[in-house]
Structure formats: C-alpha cells, structure tokens
Amino acid sequence: ELKVEQNPLFLSMQEGKNYTIYCNYSTTSDRLYWYRQDPGKSLESLFVLLSNGAVKQEGRLMASLDTKARLSTLHITAAVHDLSATYFCAVDMWGNKLVFGAGTILRVKS
Amino acid sequence: ETGVTQTPRHLVMGMTNKKSLKCEQHLGHNAMYWYKQSAKKPLELMFVYSLEERVENNSVPSRFSPECPNSSHLFLHLHTLQPEDSALYLCASSQDRDRGVYGANVLTFGAGSRLTVL
Image (tube, rainbow over all chains, first blue to last red; front, side, top):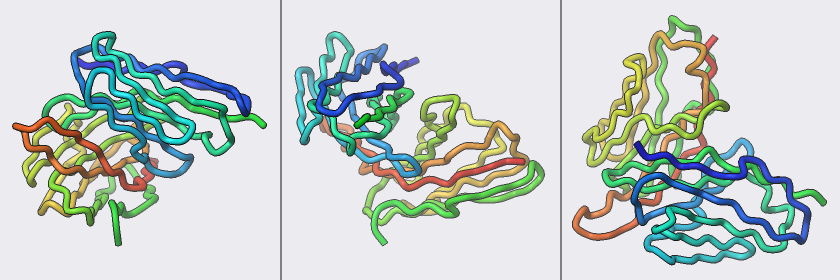
C-alpha cells in the first residue's frame, strides 16, 4: 500500500525567510503533484512533476522530484502572507488513483 | 458555469436520513472522483469513475453509494450514516490519460460538500 508522508505538518514562517516542505512516498512512482488549499476552499493544482529531476517554479514556490529517493520538496523563498494555506502532495498510482499526503499547514507571521 | 460544481455546500442529516450529494463538471473530463476530507485523516479516495465505469472502490462502507449517470455528473447517495462520517466530501474530475502514453492526471476539485451527521 502506498504511503505518502509530509513534513512538517505545520510550519509557522516569518516573512522574508526561506522554508522547505518534504514529501516522502513509499513505492515507485514518477508522477507527483502539489496542491494548495485555502481555508474553506477547494484544492487547487500548483505543480505537476512527471520525471526524475523535474523542477517547476512559480513565483516564490519551487517544487522538485527525486524518484530514486522517493522524495519531493516544495521550497518557499522569502515567504509572504499570501502563501498562508495548506499544501498537499499527491503521488500518482496507475489507474486514476492519487494518494495524498496529510497536508502541511503554512502560516506566515508578519 | 465552469469547473466542478458541488451541491449542496452544507448538509446536516440524522442517522436515519437518506440524502444525496451532487457533482457536475463542465470541463469535458472523462474521469470523476469522490474524496473524503476529515480533520483526523488525510484526503481519502472513495470512488473513481472513468468513462462512467467504476474503477476504484476503496473499501468504502455500503452506506455510501456512488452513481455516475454520464461523464459530467456524479452522485454520492447517503443512507444510515454514522457521526464519524461527518466530513468534507470533495468531488474532482480529470481527463483520463491514454494508458499507452505517459501523461499527467491533474485533478480539478469542486468546493466540497460539508456533511454533518447528528
């Protein structure tokens, strides 16, 4: 059974500083996704990583995938308040099945 | 309407009631999903329909009964639920990739239906 673990589960960030969220998974997959969820809202797709070594960047967020280590990271550069949300990674299993991590709650303090 | 629409947004029901959640997608996708999101557990996949055929039933209790009459609509029929079934139920859709081609399976989620079982 595929297990997806995120850490930390909660991250209190200071504005302007850099942080990293980690997503580990237990079985082979080379497709991984990051989603964002704002309070009371639905999940929104952020990044799609489809191969080993894939790196995607959007604004202050950068995601990467190491399929050999079964690890994806979401790096936050110079955190700003707008980034406060819950971030989920999801690993793609064959057969339309995405398995989600527990989510990481990010809060940016002024 | 665009995207994935779920109704109702909030539902309170007793344990003996029967109700249904509805999901509609306007994206031309051919796969639809039900996920359960509760405070105690990560997002749990419940059901997957691809081309209107159920392809995943993730050991969900029979008090939850899905229905997919066409590729744009998905229902979750609820009966004799338990208080622990209270959660946010999220519907999602995607374009099922051609199984012979390496591709992404990006889900578009609806806003969810918040269910409270008394």
